[in-house]
Image (cartoon, rainbow, N blue to C red; front, side, top):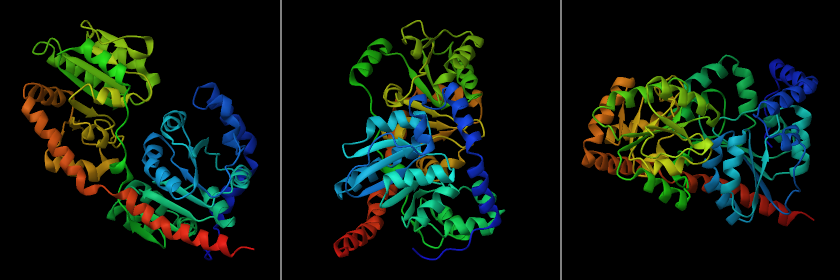
Length: 435
């Protein structure tokens, strides 16, 4: 491995602090498990203790922190298995673990990512002994980066994303940022802007491969459940508020209340970003005088239900197929937006708020093409929904425009695998030369 800059005092302090702070981290994990934020049955994995044996042969480790990052890696998982590797996929959240566990092919296994304590990282690496490590987007954990470099394991950032806010944070400690990023073999960024920020922070080898999420498969849906829901809904007009955050549920309910007189049979489906918030969503419906039902409690969108709370995990594909209009959450509140690629691929007309800095490129393309529309508040949402519900051909035109807008951005998986192939060739040559 190439010689990297020395560790800064900040990095040494961080490393020492997490080494000494292990007991506190154990307590934190226990507290999170009691609150349902950690999988109590697999808590040892968060301390680097393996939950299963290492596969034989060459192994690539891929990490995606949460749902979107993990699912974006599936195309690379398939590509590396085709190249003769076993694949270890790690995630940091329970929701990501549940979803990725259903999507992984034979030849891939899932574990939870250990917390960034030095001994836990070393324990994890000693067991799994990956030949190559890939992390998605911006998961730069200092002790993990240092541990991989110390073990001589090449680390690549794939689908690299560096927001302006994150850049400003790293830029406050430029020597520390450079000391970490210099230990990354290659950074494959999503956009020119991401690449520029990585370079300015000291990453020595940066390329642009595009966004892996453009190549992701659409989320699946259970065929029987979809048919059952379509029978229940019939010919009612339907719209979906997907991945909503606090504050947006009330806006969705308010928009429905504004439309109720003109569209008395309207069905609003709200899919909260975090399913445990289903009760809050139902309360918002009640505050607007709307009848609701919660999917997690066995409720169904029968004719008497005006707002259906889809507070379950892993069923977005079902509801994207049920409604022709989808509002993407996290955008009417300052969260940064949610990924619009999946509903666009499933031929929905997309609506979003102004706070979309997490997905600037794709929303810009969709807005310019006419595949998506911006709304600013509940009243604007209601007004736009009213216009679209009355204009089926416009919904169809938005759907076609959205699909066409995504096509130029596809191919990131192939470009990323093309960068990985030289690393694979070097590993093969080293193995052949070994006694």
